[in-house]
Amino acid sequence: MISVQGGASIAKHLFPVLGASGTASLRIGFATLILLAVFRTNLFKVTRQQWLYCLAYGTCLGAMNLVFYFAIKRIPLGLGVTLEFTGPLVLALLGSRKLLDLLWVLLAGIGIALIAPWQNNNVDLIGALLAIGAGALWAGYIVLGGKVSKVMEGGDAVGIGMLFATIFVLPIGIFSGDLAALNGELLLIGLAVALLTSAIPYTLEISALRQLPPKTFGILMSLHPAFAALSGLLFLEEYLSLTQWASISCVIAASVGATYFSRKA
Image (cartoon, rainbow, N blue to C red; front, side, top):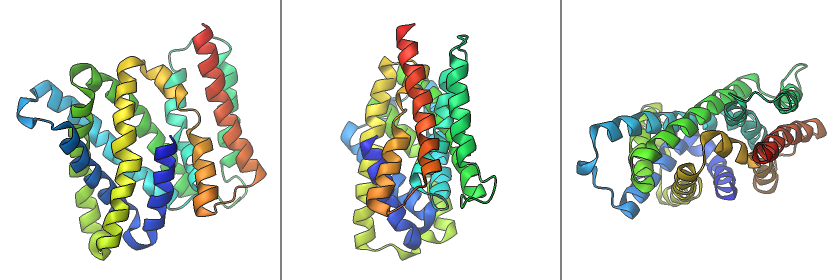
């Protein structure tokens, strides 16, 4: 989580030059090359079933990153991650039949309500909706990641998944014209972003998904909004109001509560 949110702060500095789609293309493209090289994935030994799983996993992954970058281009990083996190949180609560889980749903709902631009509170509505859409894709990524991790090695799954993510995102970056401003310095920054936000965390996550069910994995991601808000404050000077900090706290509390009582059950 520290790696992802620190990398996201660096990526946001690229938006004025490369745009959201150009930054996403650079990040995912570099991460794909790194992962395929590190794990030495033999593409010719991948079965048809594994290709299909990776296609779904990678496309979802690419769309999630692209939509999220468009979201945080319009709203602060901490708020974007808080709204995005509703996807994993909903996934964590689906299928639960405990009455206490209604409390966590209520807390999360309060958190989202505090962010929502009911009275033009400087939160961009389109950015907020994009972040929620990215959350739905994040939930899909968790489910598909759990499935693909069961049929092939984690490193190979991430590498091939990222290959499909690149195939999905790169044409958007090229045809948008965002990559036209690329130079050597931006390539190096893009490499750092790829390592921090994709190569390192996705490898760790696919390993975690081999050990944890999707529900547990989803609710253990509860500190993402806090790390994102702190990262935005430290590296982007994105100051949040007390109401917005309260919103983030509600979402985190809902996730921590769900995690704690899930373990106690």
